[in-house]
Length: 445
Image 1 (cartoon, one colour):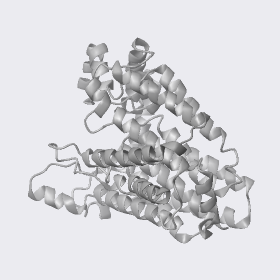
Image 2 (spheres, rainbow, N blue to C red):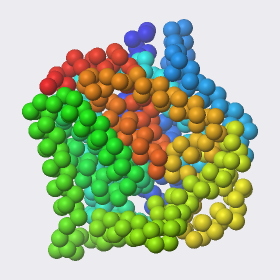
Image 3 (cartoon, helix red, strand yellow):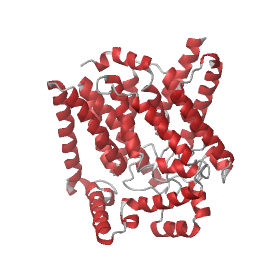
Image 4 (cartoon, helix red, strand yellow):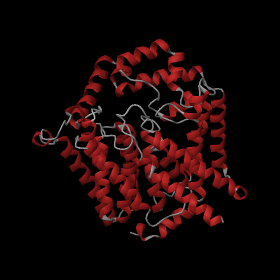
């Protein structure tokens, strides 16, 4: 019975890892929330995991890290009870869906990954398939040769040219997924040297550049620093050669995208120069110049993020203990700072329902104590991974975690990506899983 329960549990977790990222309704179809398939599937998977854990309740165990997470969850529940919009705090904002129910699934996923997740010989293959499918779709979208667009044209459904969101509904969301994917594939290639991993790392890096998501670029950059530390500590001819393969390939890809000939792009249907890399770099350059000239960081830099952060900090100061309730930021800003929020929306044409900083989001909606507990939870996990430069499996799992945590400072949590992050937090503590991973030829030098 125990083996059967764990088998179902693992299939459910594999579904969360590899099915949810692929589920999406076209964002251009406004009637139904484009993330609804992800949300419903996530809740179903969470319900299955909850039932299975109840069946195994007599053998459940909780260490200090788990108890810290429970404390975080209790604060989320209390914040929900005292929320300015209880329904929204339970179900989540439309298309965000990160209310109490979703947090519950995240934590169930984390716990099951930590104590019950088992290595499968096709795990990496599944990951590669998902990364390749999403990246190829994103590339086709970017150059506006995505097959579905012809169907949209036929039925007069509007869409955004060059909006490379793949199956995530937003380029920022896709970027956060790719920040983990690129880091993961780089680590795999450095350790194993298999050409397939190098090719997939190239493909995902090509795509992460096309998303134009700066937060994800920064996440990969920080992960790369830790990767270089690993190379230095474990230097040998093969590892250095593989690292050079990655660096040279990434540089060539970046230059190629930056210098795509007009003769190519002019022949692509509806290709948008506004979404090109050189245009994005020009925007960044103009932001820096404007900030230096005017000194107005709030309006001129970071696509308005500084202005959003300022408003979020003000709201946080108004509700420091419990926040305003999970996923209620939009309503909170309009309720607490109506004039400033409306002016920002009219000026930037941006609806603010997320803080564009996961840590500020927690502080504003769940409370400062919750943020402190969450950071303590993360610190406990990472402090136990001191052997990441000696242990290959730990290195492979920690690198994407680092990338995600860094990009989260400028990005938002989303149900298509966050479950993967929470599973990684569980897997990196699962010694049995990591031992099984090490025993496979996959990680042999």
